[in-house]
Image 1: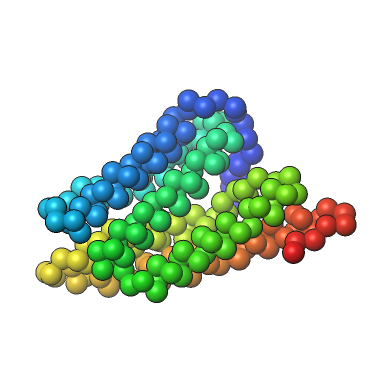
Image 2 (image 1 turned 180 degrees about the horizontal axis):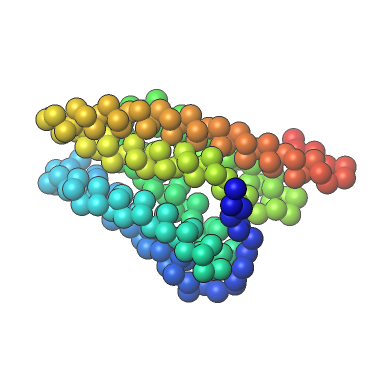
Length: 204
């Protein structure tokens, strides 16, 4: 099995992978505006919103792939990539819930996971660690959710395409939510092991 390189290889900021991650972050407020505009009486722009989601998914794949292939893994990139993932997840949750497409209870479950991870960061920081690197399970969960969200947005249509999108969208949403929490629990286990490895310390 091929072992993927994940250690920092460069301190450069302006690399292609980092620029892709930055572009994904710039797209977040545009996407949120497009998806919420109908709530405030504007026309539906779901096609453009779906396009931005699709491009974000492509760039999410490319930035990591290119960083490893070109030896451009940077600390900035390791921070930008999960930040962009979370920004899209949170903005999509807000948009779909506000539009009434996603139920509040599912949004609450996903937001609770984000709050759970955020609660670990001060503990890691207190022991001299920054945010831990996203694990494979976390990336798989994000991919499932990034498939689920555009399908759920399509399910707002009242034709056969909306019905088919609803079936697959909810399937991906279920898998993604389960994996999202599983990855969060593994993140907590990893954090605990790091802190417990230090003498006379404990993860409270």
